[in-house]
Length: 356
Image (cartoon, rainbow, N blue to C red; front, side, top):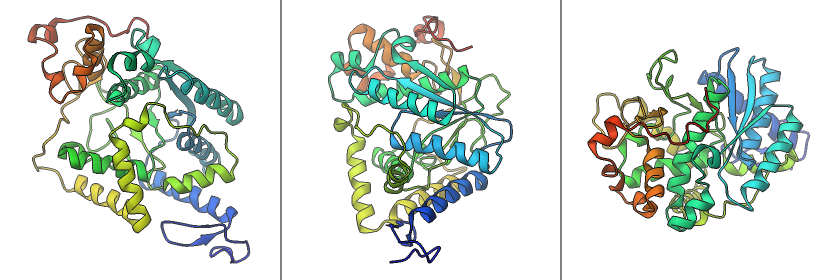
């Protein structure tokens, strides 16, 4: 069977988006063209910006780094690209994936900056966290810590934006998770291609307190096609799942997305489109959720949506030996007294952080 695009090469893949059968060369061209169109259509980057690429060594982040470097040179975006890796401290897993990150840094010729939970969170690696709380709900800690660690790292290198490798499947999972949790505030922006200070009418980047803008150039790319791109390009990526991930609640959403994709592949993109439509038309409509004004954490000084950031709240639980309680629905509301929240100056490893 011949390629539907060039009519010359042998078709190797049928795309989920439009069912077109493409040869390898045409698949690469279409994949990169669609990522470029996402970048241009959503105005994700500006000439001269420094972009931190969050890289874990997995297929998504490795493909993101490879494609961004390629497109930056081909279309003259004028970007300075820097790889940013976070070591969560998971023995036998993260050390191996970070080795892949270092190899990609060398192969791409891009600088690499690494930060660890150990240095940022007073020795609380994920292995140490799990030793206290067990394997249930440990992703709550890792998600909060990782989000802040990426923010810290990107600010440390004075990046203008942080690029992540979230794909269409990932974001569809997030839409469903926020839906079943009844979090309409976050549901509104579950599928936004850019979040943070400059997105959705946010604050000026010149203000002292603001979220660093996060962009998702792979938002409309299916996970299966990212896998094939990485495989056929012979990219060096780490394919083993996190040892603590199988017990995560997100796994149920992932199974749902896979079932929908098998029944109707277009359902994934349609889910994102529906969530984006909700975001566009949500102004003036009340919502249930926790999205609030941007503040600075009274403890560590980092950007937060509440007086005490979630990372500091979780760290306090760990220090008290009550880590399991932190994952309960209402636990974080009563960890600190009013006086703690207004006057506490305790640092959450800020003295160890190399951020400016």
